[in-house]
Amino acid sequence: MILVRYFAAARAAAGVNEEKVAAPDLATLLSVISQAHGPTLATVLDRCSFLVDGLACHDRSVPLPADTVVDVLPPFAGG
Image (cartoon, rainbow, N blue to C red):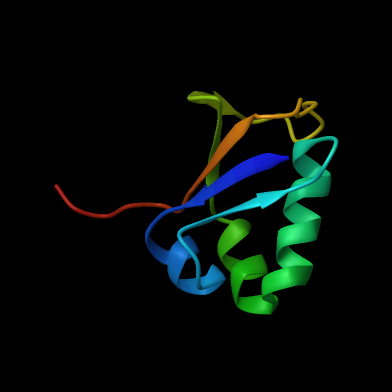
């Protein structure tokens, strides 16, 4: 299972801080959590960055082995 950790607006849209999800790759994971949490999260995910085991990931086809941690990071403002 993949540990998905949500931050800021993603956390608010998902309604949870974190959850475990089964998915073979990042694209499937995003589809599963979008369907589970609804259109608000899906909209937020379109603007998010993702860390896979602490490393920035821009390739949604990246495989996610068991025990992977995915951080969902919406854009942050501030200075």
